[in-house]
Image 1 (spheres, rainbow, N blue to C red):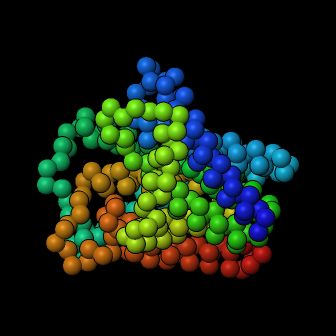
Image 2 (cartoon, one colour):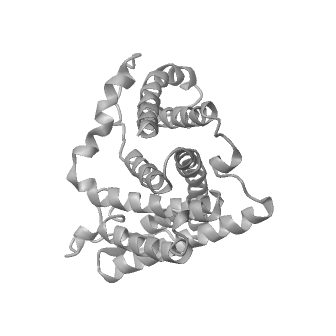
Length: 294
């Protein structure tokens, strides 16, 4: 319980630090990087989260390649990364196929399919996927899950890290009105509003989907002993989502609209059920015979 409380305190500290540091860094970088203030807070908070979690691991003398999820033979990196990407793309293609068959999604009528545009979309989606996968897996399935596993039970570590992972996606800072004067306390004033989505019941289905995805990624980490395949899986999912959003759209007249979430019209109860099936299958194949693994 003490470990969980410490992790929650570190998360709160990261959010407070992000809110305070965003102002001087925004003023310092503004002539060079014109990044909206609300995005600046978000990025700095994530960076602070990295620093505090790794500092926690260092203080507790459990910071090493194995705990961080990077204990892997270099000759296997390419194999695990590409396998993960393929699996992630496959998971989302199956989900999207179901949504199209059920009439929840429809193909976009007007799409620019010129070769130049399509290559640009593909490259941007893959680069975004790899960047998101590297950052989020290093933090959540690397430092956080690895650190929790070293201090508490594996099952508890999987659940807690997945809950934190899912919740982090609903902390959203709102854009400031144009010409708003930014003071040292502006970030702190914006912080309570960043949690406004947690009071909206409409996030439940998407929250469950993100939680299930976190559990699946955790199982992949535990099975492989590192996060390389997790990075690939995460990248493949993000890549597929970007491509799906470009090619298809939500069908507002569908009677099965409740299967997808209000916020992105892709993740939702159907995605949660699909991921639950994958988790059950993966667990049965790799963990059921040895209950000590999880």
